[in-house]
Amino acid sequence: MLTYTFQDDARPLYRQLYEAIRGDILAGKLACREKLPSKRALARNLGISTITVENAYDQLMAEGCIYALPRKGYFVAEIKKMQEPVQAPDLTPLRLPPAEPQAQFDFSSSLTDGSHFPFSIWARIMRENISLHEKDLFQMSPCCGIRPLRDAIAGHLASFRGMQADPDQIIVGAGTEYLYSLLVKLLGYDKIYCIENPGYKKLLKIYESSHVRCRCADIDRQGMSADRLRQTGADIVHISPTHHFPTGICMPVSRRYELLAWANETEGRYIIEDDYDSEFRIKGRPLPTLFSIDACGKVIYMNTFSKSLTSTIRISYMVLPPKLAEKYYRELAFYSCTVSTFDQYALAAFIQEGFFEKHINRMRLYYGRKRTAVRI
Image 1: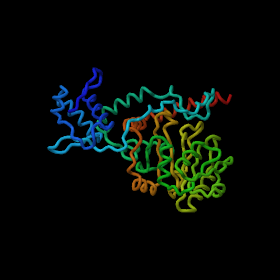
Image 2: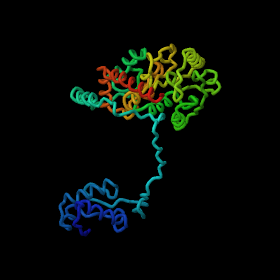
Image 3: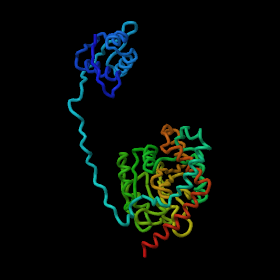
Image 4: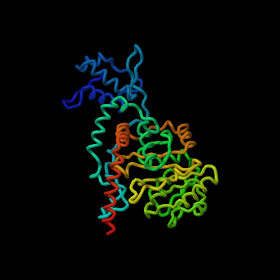
């Protein structure tokens, strides 16, 4: 009969019994297929309750240390090459790269000024959504995002950017970096991708981490040229024609039509239009997008709310051409939407109730004054 002495400590009795039996099994004191005492017999011998023994046996069975046979009892399982760790795990702190020094004027960071975020309005909308959409908030979001948000984005694009897009063409995701990875899966790992030089340095790392061939093409004063693009042999080109980073170049219409002609030369070519901060054009209305002048379904439009609202909201979206949208739903619809349903409903209401447009107008004035102060 098994006999153990229990300690007067914070551990429950079933835990102490489980550890004692498990230790004997690992040490070989209890042989393989050896029959263990019944729950009642062991409880009577140790002076504890049957439930305590039952809990200990259940834990041992869950870990595969023992097994039960109907009407026969409990037996020690066969355990091969199982041993306790001989030394404590290495708790040495990780050697992380040093943090970048803080600059007085940071022109490279994507962070936004949180002091201008409309907290009171956002908090009120969140409370209203919890009340109005109590059941909807706990429903799984479709792979492309909830319909109210996609409707709101489609309406915003139509009024602000002159784009006619079906809400089903819009795919919502947690940041453009996640959407880039989806695009690689959608367009293919065998394609050659091209980015601007100079350009957004992180793009090269993103595409290389997806194990696709990525090449750089030098830009001139009008942006990416079709001739240099052809020299790279690329199938997919990633550009920011409305406001190039970091030069600020705005691609003229003639150059845009040249790139559309390049995309139409061969089946399988696409243009990824990154429109990351189109809302903040200082003078006049935003320029027409490549997507809005594309008649052949060759442009993938991408934008984010990280620039217009806050960098921590992590809500971005892409608008796929009809054929690519059908392919997405056919091949990648098993992916879950990576944006919280709570945030999606809040953003949808924020746009539909006109607060987003007011926020953009207010921030455009603020950034305009800030730009003037820096240039003086």
